[in-house]
Length: 89
Image (tube, rainbow, N blue to C red; front, side, top):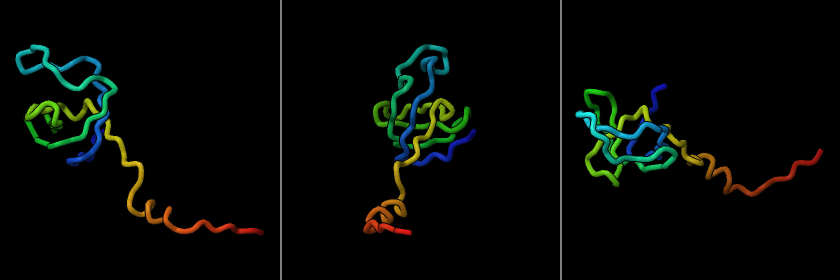
């Protein structure tokens, strides 16, 4: 399933295999189960790459992450600002 990624999204790492460069050498990167803020997006020869501040310009395959939806949106926040009403039968 393809996620609709945007800069600022929270990304949950689901990669348990580690990270490797084009030459097959293991490289540092996000660990399984960690959450990172997307700092940039870049289309590459292998698909969409996500960039995170911790790793500079390195790009990580977006299929190795699940997008964490925001806890609330503007409408939900405005709804919570209304006074509670008790309806009795």
